[in-house]
Image 1 (cartoon, rainbow, N blue to C red):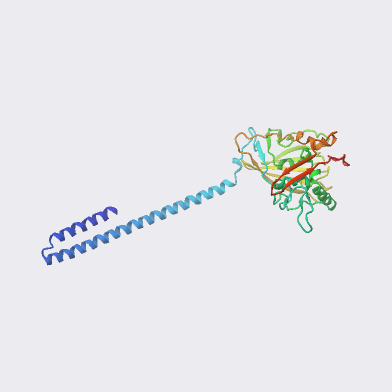
Image 2 (cartoon, one colour):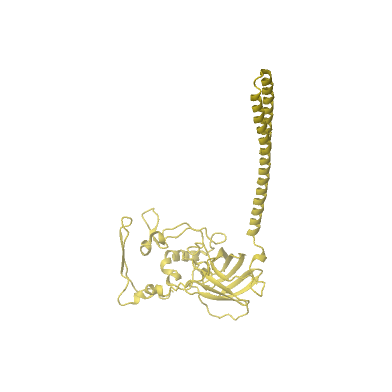
Length: 374
């Protein structure tokens, strides 16, 4: 098309030059002028036709490209949707078996440990009444932490929304919540129990064999063995209980019994009795996600079994490891400091500047009346 335009334009130039050379004869000039005009008009028309043809071709090509791009995008979206639902073949398998390979370092990325149930943000884990008709304010032990001591909001992980407490057990939960800073076993670095160990803000590592699954938790060196073969129960209760597993398709189902009654489910005082039995389900969604469910059975505390559900995420940094959070020595002063002849921790003072002033906290240690408590 561009060649046609150039030829037509050249013809018009040559014709105009010829007309100027024969301009001595008026009739001839007029005739030549008319002819030149006609030819020029013809060339212009040809150029317009060429431009129109080129535009049409461009529009046609653009439409084709657009359609192709749309088809390509649609195919990509379709492939993406198909990829979201991983087929069973995409889940890695333990060598020599047909079972999923769950080995790796995993972690829950939720605010679950603050409270299993949905909740709004709060100023601190320990509160006291504020001004009349006002919001509660942080209690003295956590006042110095400011925003770092607050409780983040959460939509909760309890299926159905609420834990089905018996009325008298709910009253105990509320009392636990009010005294959580002093009563939560994790404050003293006691073992978290099951299922709480799974959704603490610490990673844990799964090591898997055909007959045993070992889980090592970052918090307080906690760990447990899930027995896939037949073993005799120990016959004694423990912080992490006795775990027996089986496979249901691609789901590892674990029944945990013989758990101590001194563990909590979270920092908000949700608790259980010595009759607790937990049924866990670990289901791979993709090679990088597990769906974790724990069904709680405890007729002494709850009106019916209830379930919590949340995803677990594989840690993807290079060479992921579970680094020990050895908190026993960290809480020695809290746990045993009151036995010292001379107290080490007596006073803390911090200058917050014009946004807070100087904060002074005096510490007094007294004998306890709850020696039987953990």
